[in-house]
Length: 373
Ligand SMILES: [Zn+2]
Ligand SMILES: [Zn+2]
Ligand SMILES: [Zn+2]
Image (tube, rainbow, N blue to C red; front, side):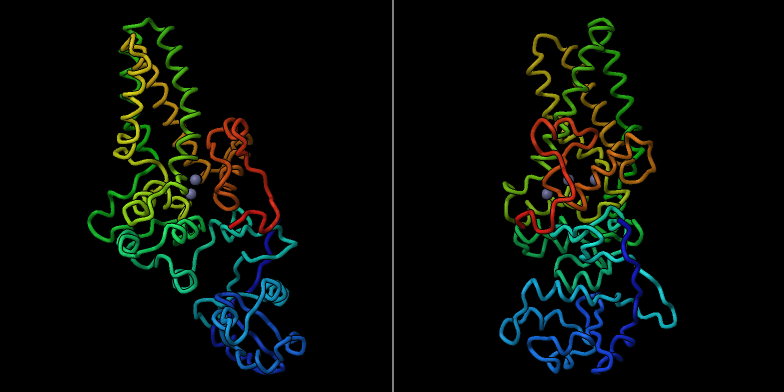
């Protein structure tokens, strides 16, 4: 479904269309030519003319003066002609439309997007901040969130609306010397974790014999796929049980929130080694509790699990950032749908297997507004 390509207007251009002969209004960045609608407006054409060339976000929401229904916004869509751009006169840049348009397929109410490509359209930070009053991408994010007093409900609603920062660069998190610590390149994962996995596995093989150790390792690998599913569904998207305070929200942001907020950020995608150690430690204990009868067995299973994790994190990265062969292409589509369409389904990243078993397989496109949001 290719999006309509609509032109970008300068603010001055929009402001000059303020008469009955040609009347433009804006709603955020969207520009509407409502000239033909003036006579049809239930509140009278003059009311609109008052806002000719101006933004109507506030007045449309203002219940005292003039309440507008969902239907009003739908009517407005028919008059959508473009976007307000940064003031660069003379330049007629174009931008791919990302707004509701039935021929273009559904727009997902919870994310505000309709296609995977929307994930890579730069956010207008200033406008985004004005519209949503969430985080200002011009400033370091972490302290904003910490000091914000956002309610959990608002935080979760906003965090699942993807933004895109400067063509995929990393938005400032700390804004100081700690900044590099917030970034992890994808290749850190295999470099740090493959050597200990092979070392421990060789220890396991020495204690158990190669084929037995291989069997435990494979078992651990299969177990990983389930852990991957359960962690993504119940820990990363803990939404319902997330503590409604700044500690809870900030931790969630660092764990998975930032990946949904800025899904195409290359350096905030794979797990930093420190976080991995914290999450893996309980599983190391668990492996030894379950396979208490043989230390080597426990270690071999654990190695299989960690190897599964490495495959998962690399797969996740490549799904976001590489062109892939056909099997992975459909997996890519599936995972990106988790981002732009329905974050409450599609938790499997390396396969859909557990989504099918547990009934959370992502099916698109659900009709607009089908999800209670
Ligand atoms: Zn979530
Ligand atoms: Zn992702
Ligand atoms: Zn997710």
